[in-house]
Image (cartoon, rainbow, N blue to C red; front, top):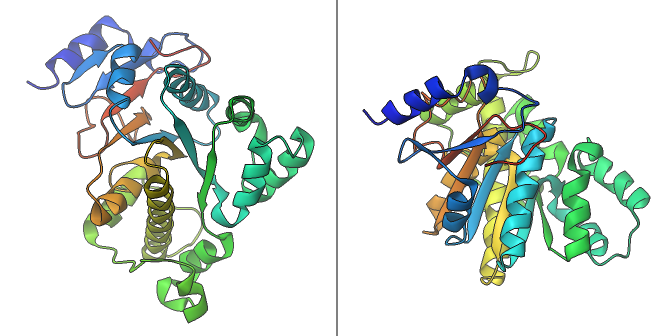
Length: 285
């Protein structure tokens, strides 16, 4: 019964519209209610929490448009916001601070960004808006060599010095977490990598990002942090779960619908609070 309204909506809105990458109409499913809600209704809810997780496919322009729309709307409504970034390492925070302060130009910063991540054109509008408005941006990620080593050889291969860089990480991967990772990847793991090691790398990633988020939120209790991360990290099983293990803090998870992985007739509140469908070049309604 809980999905009756969703199924009715799917009948009224043809699948070709909901999944279109170019259609200007995007829609928001309130997962708990099983109903579509307006963008304004969702934002009113987001105003009440200190943490908002927004998932993405990294190369999907529509997902980044949606992230910017939420950031802009909350900021312009008077909510002090900060932006947490999977795509920037915490040890490069000084570069982010200098970017927001206007001390680094776009061409120089693009080089720094590409050393941390890549796909600058996809993220550029978010970074430019944050700079123009003076919105703090916070690097959450860990050194790439650590996650690569764990993915290759497992958490036990890390040296004591490397482990000291990972505050509070125990890396206790259980079957539920493995099942979650398989689903988030759509059943695909790159190359010949050991799947258990890959899961340990994901958990290290999630745990350290959770630690960095909490460090910022505790020192800036007046701000709402909007965390931008891949959907495999932003799902409630990912970073939010690691947050919940450490502190009782309200949050919301917004995920884009992904055909074959996260669809409206399958998503539950165990995974997300809102599902965004039909994200393309236009705004969410």
